[in-house]
Length: 419
Ligand SMILES: *Cc1c(COP(=O)(O)O)cnc(C)c1O
Image (cartoon, rainbow, N blue to C red; front, side):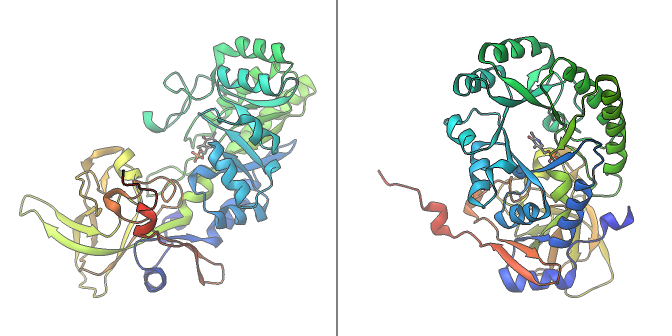
């Protein structure tokens, strides 16, 4: 576990990133992306496994292509993500679409070969009208969630995602009306590291599968929690997987049905594999009873999670001149927004928790760790008209490849029209 918190990007690499692309910049480690993919692809599944990357976590084409080359499939959360995958050269047969929003042109994306996952009775009905007699995947909310906060909980009564388990008879009635076959049962209940929770959901899903005679595949979604800072829990995929595998084997003994397994991690595959390299822009303090602030050239424009959830990210400061002293700093983002703080209290975006860091000077490099998932993909993009930061891939051979350029001001205003 110790090695989990080793910096992804050290002082030398951070310096190279700044020289190549400037700051702020995202950097992903190819070596770690490959390792996480190998762990996911080794998830125990007695009757076959399809592992999909939930691309909303990190949708850059270079990452998608890398994962595709390693044998991962993909889960898209909107029709735009499905199209983005196709534009990146991913075969449609590798894509499943599990969308809160019914695509305006559902027919066209399904005809391309993308597998559709109906997430509500309305979506199921619309699919039935377009594709009577077809097979599909059905997302069910099993009535249990395990997210770390209400904002990340995607199962249970407070979540709108999927068809509420008590409404299964209505779903089956719609299927009967259009001759639809449910080939895949899908649930995604949110961030969890506890194997018992996974086993409980698997049990509920297998019970549901008894009333779905055509189902050959169980998709357990993503939500495998990872640790970004010491004290957070890291999922052991082998332990979770063995618990689920044993239940699939029992189910097979009892029913003769060999159920294939799918999982679709986003966080697990990417979160620890990326970091943001930034520079210290300013250092201010608010007096004896106040705080020392490190002001960076990054913030909620690259990383929204701290202000949104009070998420904890490792912060490593690499001073050009080491004074040997350490000081408590609040690390602030560059937006004119008091909520733009990178060191909130855990799970409390309103709270402040200073970090002990080496004494800093303006111009020092500061790296925010754990920024591979829901970072470049989910930020307060262009707030204060800051351009999107570039993305780089740190190759296995130690070289750096630019995988997305820094946005220009012209691109930010490109769609504006003066009346
Ligand atoms: C977001 C999402 C995932 C990935 O969730 P993580 O917590 O990042 O693993 C998987 N499946 C679906 C349907 C999702 O919406």
